[in-house]
Length: 444
Image 1 (cartoon, rainbow, N blue to C red):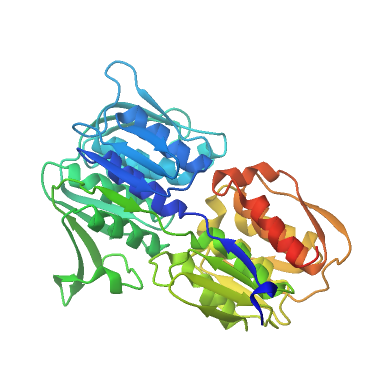
Image 2 (cartoon, rainbow, N blue to C red):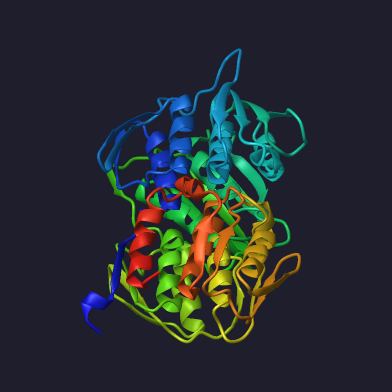
């Protein structure tokens, strides 16, 4: 197949790594140049909050110079410093933990939807470090005011049943503690481990001293965190020593989450799609899109810097997506093109995202003519004729991932129209311009 037949897309920068790199730079004592951070609403939220806490940012093209906070995050003395999250869940969880590691008064607030997203497990962990927590309305939910005096160190227990971002925030704040901090994972299960690995990777790159330990026969021993595939509460812990974030330059790699829509289009459309700027060795959990599409029958080729997906006959699979929840809407839509049922399991935490993504994904697949059923923690998609030739306005639920995944229905010959196209600015402001290349390449 000639290159003329391949649709080529440049990957946007990783949202997850952009958050973490900018935070690490802001916690440094000197300056860090972050190359190619994602330009999106969520990243702007994180930078605004970090600025409120004492960091400074200078943006020059694709390079952002971060001047760190002297002495850690600083809040108000008489009145709280307002940390405005709007609808960025990642910002909320990471920054709330950092506020606890800082000193002073902080108020965490956001949109009405953000005030429906739980944060109690994280604030309980902060209380164990001496932070005074006052909820304004519902117990365990923003808005919340924190009176922080820095992390004491010693031990913190945290459950990852709702989100891995809780522990990522605590890990990023722990080096500021007065003494070594041991973070124990508790609860019944742990979700989204690969995002914790991204946090550890950034910490390592910024020269933070830490160990990941596993319990073997009742004894804690250091392990290679890069080889961890599954986290069992009670059997893993994180030991972080007081240390300084330090790096002169950090380059953000391509984003597997946002690449997933284009890779999916390659599998279900008429033309192959090549994504440039992707690392197949990435620690991003959403790199799993390659293996999920392959398991469904997609032909995929890759090298060190790109991935190409070819139009393929797809069949259904059963797949546990607890480690890569952001891919669920994408895979659910792809499953509507398959010739047998697909069941996605272990995704109850999708119900507390920007919207209830299980309900929303099922509703929009049905709107396109497909069939879908959900349980508390799963979604099953059944083969059914999609509404080729029809114009369908898909609900977007003020959720960037729903807007982008339903665009894939254009590959079925549907005139796919997003209800609120602008909601993609949360993570991928240039999405629709890039998507036009896919549509034109497929004659849509």
